[in-house]
Structures are given as C-alpha cells and as structure tokens.
Length: 214
Image 1 (tube, rainbow, N blue to C red):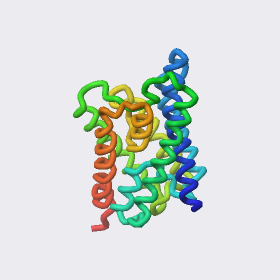
Image 2: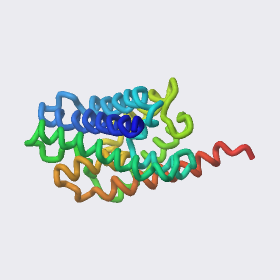
Image 3: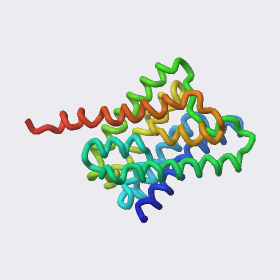
Image 4: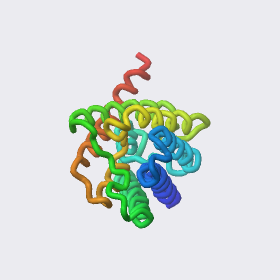
C-alpha cells in the first residue's frame, strides 16, 4: 500500500505541476515561458524521485514500468496495478486543474505541431534515450540514489526544452492521456501512448548489449 500511495502522489504531482505550468503560462500571458515549463517538468520529476524513489521506485510513467518489466527488474504481476495507480494519479491531477482553470481548453494536452509521424518518431526517440538514462542510474526497478534524480530530471528538462515545441515531449502515456481525456481533446492521443512505450522497451536490448560482458 505504501508503494501505491507513493506512486499515486508522485504521478499526481508530476501532472499537476507539469501541465499546470503550461496552463498558467497560457492564462497569464506567457509569464512562465517555454524554458520555465521545461524546467518545471524536470524539477518535479527530480523532486518526486528523491521523495518516493526508495518507496515505489518513482516510475510515474507506464512506459517506464513496462520497460522495467521487460528488463526483468519489475514483477509482471505488479505491472497492471502500477499502471492503474499512475492513471488514477494523472486523472486526479487533470481534474484538479479543470476545477481551478475551467476556461482552459486543452489543460496541457500534448499536440503535434507538424505531422503525426514527425511527433511519433520524436516521442519514440525521446523516450528511448530517457529510458536509457533511467535504467543506467536506477537500482533494480527503483529510480533512487544520489544522482538518479538529477540525471533523470535533467534529461526530462533537456528533452522538453528542445522537443516540446514540436511534439510536446510527453515521453509518458499518462501525462498525455489525463489532460486529453479531461479536456476532451484525444484526437492525437495514440501517438503519445504507443510511441513512448515502444521507445522505452526498445532501450532495454540496447542497454543489455552495452552492458554485456562478452
């Protein structure tokens, strides 16, 4: 139960602060800026890793949980529960933001600025490299340790900074799912569910190859 509560709170905080920064930037004439949004996502991920990493692993992301399962670091029987908890935390955050900012149309939902295929490829690559960082600094299936939060949060901020204007730099199915469902704008949602999962899973054989002793 401690793991479930920690994963719920961590995912809630990620969506509340991350998509909240997008909403507030829209509502208040760009006061946060694109740089500020990228930093917000990076800092909230870093903070939640340090807060909950040693309890739940601070996955905060179904793609990460699935990749850890493929890597044999996370029990398959726990995977459906973790995904449900992450969904619940993300939806709760988006509903909170809907109550606070009812006039906002997208609630921070990710949308391609170009073609669907462009955003699909971008999301795949972004999540691939994010997962490579995560699995290299994680202890087992837990994102914990002195430098894990800095490395993972820094990667999230970096990728959001340069790729955000193109694809939204979701890298996380529930980060896109919750605001899309609550706002009613799910027309491109498949990109942000399929591409991050494929990208994260693709990182595992590459990691195994790089770490192979022979």
